[in-house]
Length: 341
Ligand code: ASN
Ligand code: ZN
Ligand code: CA
Image 1 (tube, protein in one colour):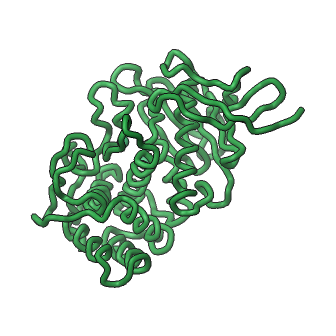
Image 2 (cartoon, rainbow, N blue to C red):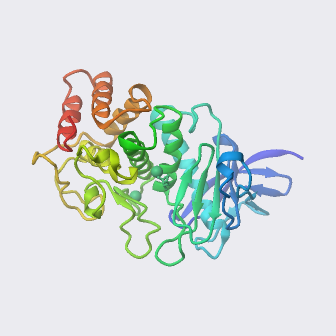
């Protein structure tokens, strides 16, 4: 039967009603987007990968693509299994569009090939992950945390794929912190890319599914305020969990983009505390993201450290804006402000 692309929509958990591109096959409509590499979303029905899944491909949680008899998916609440799928699919759409529009990048792999989402993974699973091929989302625990399918986390997970296919930053030590920071940075840029007056972007990660506090898992303007993440580089950063050593990179990016002065974005509108007492004026998100993306795709390698990231972003800023440019000076000042030399 004839396969074609049709316009549909979905009622998401965190983004209201969103447009979707569907694949029509006969009388059924699939949550599969031919305009973005055939990226699709499946229901794994609360199954979990076995220990052998990653090693041998045995016992992996699989499922079927979400399918409907009409072009509408979800109802905006978790009472429909389709709602989290709408968020996940919208997340891959928006992240795809962000990378394409901003950097001319064709998907995670840069080849135009798509990927897929698994939703309803595990039971009370408060996490999401990229495994080299696809994104997987838990449903949260049903009380404090909802499904982890927010736009910033979708952008975060897909950006792990971009990092893996570019710099290849090793997921431990300082390079692991840079890998995590890259995902928080671009996950947040995806959120701003889709922002509207009623749902402006922020520098919190995962605030949408933090149903109790709306504070999220991490914050970029003051990472250390969670008691575990670093605001400032120290020689022991390499020994920390990569989700804590990422704080240095997140803080650098916030300062570079927004500056150290009080802002209403980021959650509460306080200053971003610098490690050297300096005041930083931001160069804006567009320039900061362009610098980080060029550093990631041209200069960083698997073993890049924070000191190496400083050199990489300075080279990127010099390429994009000129040696001695205000943007290059701002990069140096922002790294100084997080104690990276
Ligand atoms: N949600 C986590 C992340 O993407 C999963 C992990 O620890 N890799 O960072
Ligand atoms: Zn991550
Ligand atoms: Ca956010």
